[in-house]
Length: 390
Image 1: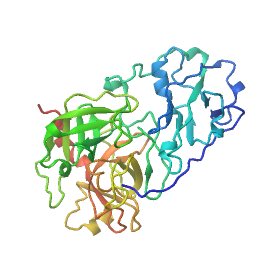
Image 2: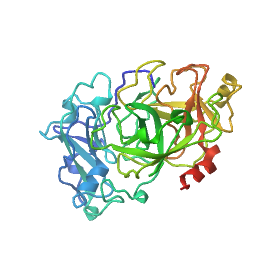
Image 3: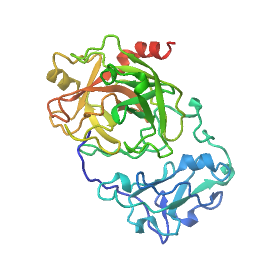
Image 4: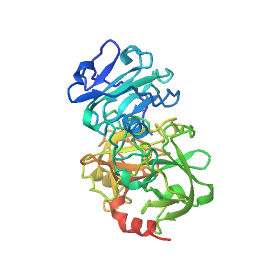
């Protein structure tokens, strides 16, 4: 889907003898007075495929009596009391997200197994033991989770050609599979996935699987994934394989997904992105035209380029029903084979909306030919009718 690059996370942390803190000005003695440190938590083990995550909301959910809903600060060190900065690991630390070791997402570090880490939090004394807004891990109650918001914050760097995503930072993206991944899709409620019609033309629901909570394309057994069958497919009745018009479809799952820190819903409907607005695409598509599918989910940030799309595809592009996106006349960023059906996402004010569905383009990342996405706002009535049908 995106060109392969090397990137490094710049960490803003203060290095002490054994620990790192966030906020970086925090120290061991900063948590005093009406605040106190929690006990140490080690909720996860290092994984050669994913890394090592000590996720704040996960810890809140499994240790509610020892945590607070809104921690002030976080401290991290290895279980052997070694400073993370001395391990050679690539990591990110914030009170909201927790401690994330990202070796497996960074070129040049993927063969290095993360150290095993523990964390503790600085909490207001009066709030320790209070329950959070989501008190049961892997709860199926949709109202406990806000659409378009992630537990794990995604990368927002503007990297030319795209980058591997932080695992589970796009929790509404799913993989459509027969034996392997062939298209993407987006969870719009617990029973329905929005995708592209061209992905499912002639498809047999009985042969399809939808995998949510996935990061490594071929690793379906992480304990975080949900592998669900398909009961029904809705193709748009006016879909045209020749013109790509009405390239939209809905999958109804055999059973609802369970919403948690790794699987959530995107918001729909929402505001349409305007010309040159920043939008994001993620998927398991090729990193360049004709290349094999990548091993992990990747993401890229682009701009809305409707004017260029109209000029590039005058016989096919309809701005009322489609969105063009890329980097105007430069290229290098685009969706590609295997990304079809995945989301074009827009975040105008801290919440992600499903603005488009990956539809078609001229190869991948071509400077004069932006990618074209089915505009979801043009199909809201159709979507509503299908998801509410028997």
